[in-house]
Length: 244
Image (spheres, rainbow, N blue to C red):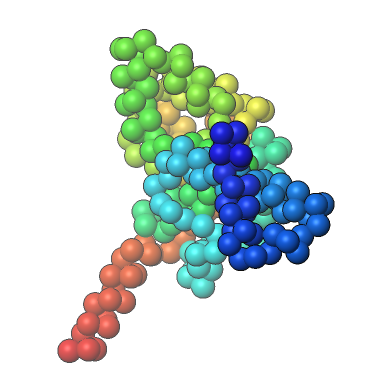
């Protein structure tokens, strides 16, 4: 079993030998137990690999989400999105709101859930992604990197629109969106409302083409309220003040 890399079976077999349960099992029960253990082990390793390859900004999961904070986050909509049916349907999700309200955390939580369900996910800060792609143009690995992005079931582009796109970044964005349109899903988070993205992209013709592919039939989460980080700092300061 070790030579065939059936590590789940090995552990289950050793455990049953140590706890004395082996003689109590029928042949069918033993085979079933070993196969289930191997399946669970491979599934867990696959999930861990997907999460590691996704490179999330936060170790976020849906169990840690807070809906008691007034930030215009609809629990029913969020829970439906975590079922990842929108990924099956090749639909997009746009998350907008001011800094600190939880855009990156929400997108990471959905992405983490997608990994658990077996989807390939890639998280990237938008500015860093374009900078990396520009470097790949110089060393000749651009096509390979674009192909890798295209293969992801879910691409998360975080902090879109922090600065206007130059001509190269605009063309890269167009290529990424065109490759994924109707084939894969994309989550885009931004501090800017969607109606201001046209100005960030620039070049009206290209901006129209990009937004038509991104926004059409996309799910939207428009967060509001004060920065959660700022609220947490205030709460800590209040506790410290009361304690003194």
